Length: 470
Length: 118
Image (tube, rainbow over the protein chains, first blue to last red):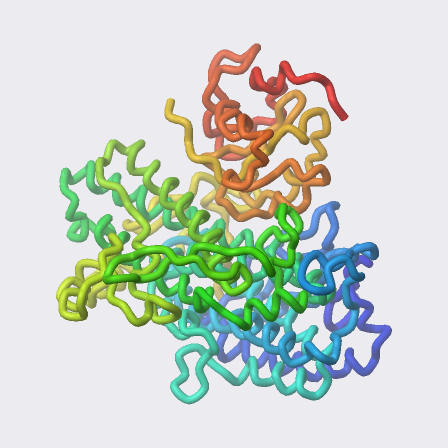
């Protein structure tokens, strides 16, 4: 069905036909708006040129226009239903998908939804103050677009909790607004979402590496036998694409600007000239990539195996894979440290599902590095950026017990600590990057440390007035 | 010119179909229209995956997941942008968006010589 914008909560799930659910969500709405006011973007604006979802089908799903952010139409949108859809994997493969939550999987499904839901408001909180130092109005607008859509993704998960998980679900929906990123007493569930996003280089790295983790996590939930979750995630992926666009092209532009300054001043040390050096960019890549790898969980996981067997969470591109979709007889190779070196070990494929998803993610990230290295190559710069070893700087899973260099050498704690500043952003790096973060709010102008985009948003020029301040 | 790495690839099932749903989905407007097939710019694609699920004939996959039968399309997608196509004076290159150049109206040799289908 099409999106009903006459309702207090825009939706395409016929909220008006379920008064109890509608009232429950309408009572959650003021809490959400209060959270947005206190934990959302800190820069006061009159309106922002934003994309708003208007449909979920192929006839154009969004329109663009200047809207006051607090009046953004956050709503509940599920992808179109396929009435013939069948479970693609696990013990119930071939059976019709579920329109209600089976009692035996209630707590597991709720947990999956809460963990996904918890990441959505977390990133808004992490990025709350970034608007105060935006390098251009174009970038400021992109930040706000990401923020409002992460807010909408929260709505997507809260709808599922309210509609399908009763009192417990409503309590969990409240808790999503009560936990806060970095809060010592009540932190967000996953570690990467309690890290600061203190500057725009971190923001671009986050939207490249961490939002790309989101692409893969949502991709596995899209395969779920619980059809409302599947349809919710399918539509969220559409919006997530923009977030990855912001990260990919953001890092492009920082690298591009670095090469321009290197050529102009004939030095790699461009910090005194208002740039971010390739060394610093590499250390930021090392950090954001490694903390994002942790989001995939342990390499071997019985939880992931159980979720798969039950049909709750599939693999990336499950339906396109050419195997039995049961995996009970299959094996997989995972990376481990054996006899003091990085090696591989064969384990049951069912236990290695987190590793399987992470491997897909890593292949995406390798493409990103090729892309940024192409910028260097075209600029005539010999230096290349790289991804660190999968075992580098890990705090979750098998590698958490080891010290591994970016090149993949297993070393002692003393060696690792001695070289740490060469591999991860230092206080000096962060201080320098922060010193560059000065707001540039004049249409068509941009900060010294980043190149302008090759084109604007929705065919508007770069110098378009994307944001009006209050 | 060096061939750029391909993130997503449109393969043979698109030939003579050109549904264009993927064009509507792409957030960076990087899917270009030949005469009989669509092509993803390897330089402009951001690897977001928005195009892949909307293709009604499952012609789009990540480069690493292309059906071995269609392997030639990985390089061929890139060649659409680097080679001089029939009837054109220079390569398509990296125009920065398909909408600004419109339909290219020509194909690579691999696609142009493919038997009609669909």
